Amino acid sequence: MANKKRIVVYPGSFDPVTNGHLDIVHRACRLFDHVVVAVSQNPLKTCLFSLPERKRFLTLALAPLIRQGKVSVELFDGLLVHFAQKKGAEAVVRGLRAISDFEYEFQMALMNRHQDSSVETVFLMPDEKYTYLSSTVIKEIVRLGGKIERFLPAAIVPEIRKKLRPAR
Ligand code: PNS
Figure 1 (cartoon, helix red, strand yellow):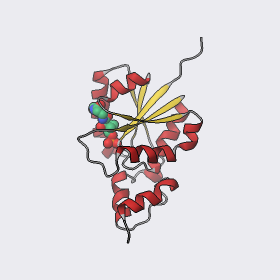
Figure 2 (cartoon, rainbow, N blue to C red):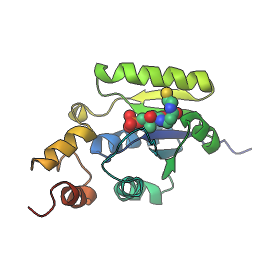
Figure 3 (tube, rainbow, N blue to C red):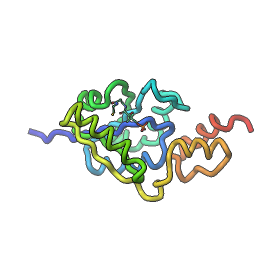
Figure 4 (spheres, rainbow, N blue to C red):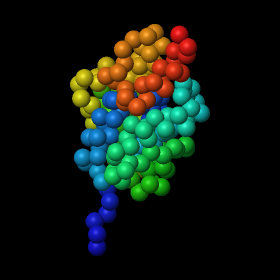
C-alpha cells in the first residue's frame, strides 16, 4: 500500500501575507508532503484586505509551490480542527517569532488539542531576519511611505501600496 500523504494546515489571517509567512510555508514543505495554507474568515477580526484579496496575494506569492502540488491555498471558517479533519491533516503549523507570541499560541494549541488530540500543533521559527516582522507593522510602514520591499513578496508590493497610499 502506498504511504499516506502527510498533510499539514497552516492557518492565519494573512492580512497581508509577508515573507515571514512564506518562510514558514517553505519550512513546512520540507517536513510534510502537502501544506494547506488556510485563510481565516473569522468575522470577529477586522482585516484590511478582503478574503479574496488575501487568498489572491497568497496564490501569487506561492505560485511555484502550488504548481508543484506542494501547497494549496483555501479559505476556512468555523473551528480550525474541523477544517484540519476535513483535509486529512495530521498537524497544524504556526510560526513563532519571539516569546511574545508564545502565550497566545500556547493557548490556541492546547484548546485545539482539547477539541481533537489527534491534530498536533507544530511550531516553526522563521529566519531571524523576520523576527520583528508582522502584517500589522507592514501596513503601518506602507501607509507612512516607508521601505517594505524586503518583507513582502515582490508580486504584491504594488497592490499593497495602491490600497494603502492611494494617489499621492
Ligand atoms: O493570523 P492569526 O490571526 O493569528 O490566525 C489566527 C487563527 C486564524 C489561526 C485562529 O484565530 C483560528 O484558528 N481561528 C479559527 C477558529 C478556531 O478554531 N478557534 C479556536 C482556536 S483556539
